[in-house]
Image 1: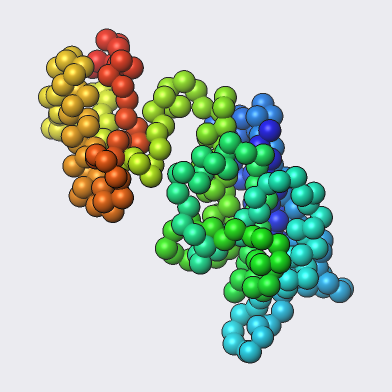
Image 2 (image 1 turned 180 degrees about the horizontal axis):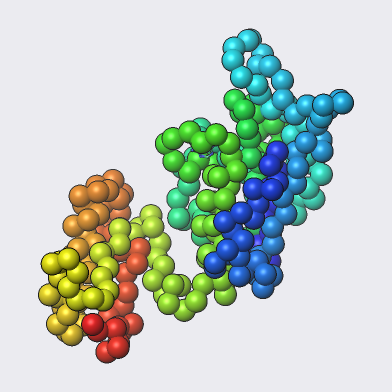
Length: 247
Ligand code: ADE
C-alpha cells in the first residue's frame, strides 16, 4: 500500500483537501495511508526550537540539520523516497509521479522559514522537488499537490471514466475543450463537429483542438515530444465514445 509520511510543523494541515473526494474516499477505503508527524516533537530545549539564525548572517531562520535528522531517522527506512519540498528542487513531472505512485509511498519533509540546513539534503539523500517557479510560504501545500497527483494513480482510486482519460503528460499535450448541455448558452453554441454524431470526425476535431492549444500555450511540450505531436492528456479512443455521449 502507498504510504505517505509528512514531516511538518503543521500536522493539522493534513489530510486537508486529500480528505475529500477521490483521495479522501480512497483514504477511508485504505487504498493508501497518510501520517503527519510534528517536527516540533524533535525540537530542542524548553521552546522545542527547530530553527536557528543563518550562518554568515542575514534575515530569516534556517531549519536545523540535527533536528531534521532526528525526525527523518524516526521514520523506519522501508525504501520509500524521501522528498524535500523546495522551489530549488527538480520540477515535478507526470513521469515521476507515475513512478512514485507505483511504489511503496513517500516521506515528505515540508520546510518553513528560509529553508533547511543544506547538510541534511546530502546526509539523508533527500530529493528536492519543486511544484513550479513561484515561492510558497512553506512545503505543505506543495506536498499536498505531490500526493494528490500520486494518489489519483493508485489502482482503484479513480473510477473507470477518469482513469480511462488519464494519459502521460511528458509525452502528452494539453486537453481539448469540453462542452455539455445546454446546446446554446448566452448565445454561444457548441462546436458543430461535436454534435454531428460522426465519431471519427469528433475524434479528429478533438485531436486538432488539443494540438492547437498545446502549440499556442505550451510550445515547449511540442518541442520535447520526439516522434509526432504529443497526445492529449485526456485523449479518448474513438471506441470509448458511445451513442449516449451525444448531445
Ligand atoms: N516551497 C516553497 N515554494 C515551493 C515550490 N514552488 N515548490 C515546492 N516547494 C516549495
